[in-house]
Image (cartoon, rainbow, N blue to C red; front, side, top):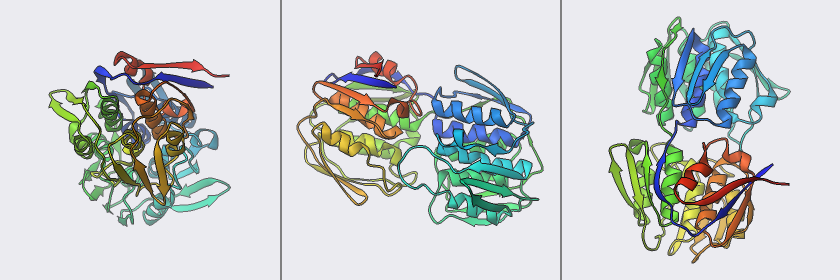
Length: 419
C-alpha cells in the first residue's frame, strides 16, 4: 500500500508535457486482434490499465513488446478467446475485446467487467448491439459467452451514446458482411482515433466523430506499421484545473485544444486566462475563483471525467455552484473527502451543490476511483497544511508520473509506503 503526502498553498508554475490518451490506447490495443499481422503504437501512456490490456491479450496468445512509450503487438495468432475475471475485474475497458474476438474468431468468453465504482455502466448496450449483428450471447456465471457463425451488418441505434459500446460495434462491424450503420454514436476523439487506425489497416469506416457512423465490412485487415495515439485531453484538463486552483501559471505542452473547448470555456468563466500556443496552452489564474454551473454531457459537451476536478476547484469559489452529473449516477465519492477538508458540498440526486469557502485544510483522505483521486490531489495542493491521500492505486490507472510532473511545477508532493 502507498500514500501520497501533499503540502498545499503554493502556486504551480512552469511547463508540463501531456502523454498519450488512455481512453484511446485501450481500444486501439484491443483492435489489434482484428489484424492479419502485427502493428506498432507510439505515444503509449505508461499506465496500469495499458499493462492490464496487454497482459490480457498476451494470455490469449498475442506477443508484445512495450518499451517506454512504444508498443509492438502481434495478436494475429490468438489461441484463446477467454478473458478471465482476475484481469477484467480491474478494468471495465476489458469489454473492448468482445467485438474483435467475435468478428475474427467467431466466439468469445469475457468476464463481466470491473473497474472504478462510479455507477452501473451496464454492458447491455454492447450485448444488444452485437446480437443485432448476429451474435448469440448468454450471460451466465459472471461471464458473457458469445458466438457467431458470421456477423452481418445492421442498423444499430443506441438509446444513449456509449463510447466503449460504439467502439465495440465499430470493431465488430469491420469484418462483418455488409454495411453497419450506428445511430446516436459516441463522438469522442478517441472513437475517431480508433477509426483512423482501422481505416489505415483497410477498414471502411465513415462518419467517426459524428452521431452517425457507417462501417462497410471487409474480408480482412492488414497490419499497419505505426500509429501515433492522440494526446490525453483529460490529463491536460486536470493540469489546467491545477494551474487555476493553485493560482499558478502553467504551460501545458501537447494539450489538444480542439478537444478541450468545453473545459476551456468553463475555466475562462471562473476567471482563468488561457492562451493557445503552437504546441499547447498556457493557463494563468489571479484573484478569486468565480462560481459557475456545470452539466456533464457526451462529447462535445463537458466531460464527466472532469467533473470531480472541477468540484475541488469550485469548493473555494466566490459564491455557489451546481454540478449536474448526467453520465454516471454514483460519481461523487470525492465529495465526502472534500467535506473532510472543509468544503461545503452536498449531493442531491445527480447534483452537487457547492457553497464556496475561503480555503480548504489538509486532512487524511482516501480516493475511491481514478478521477476522484485527481480531484483530491488538486484539493491537497490548494489547501492549507498537509494532506495525506490513500487509495493511490486508482491514480496510477490514468496519470503517468503525476508526482514528478507536479514536483517539476514546484508543487510539494511525494509518494511513500503506508503501513
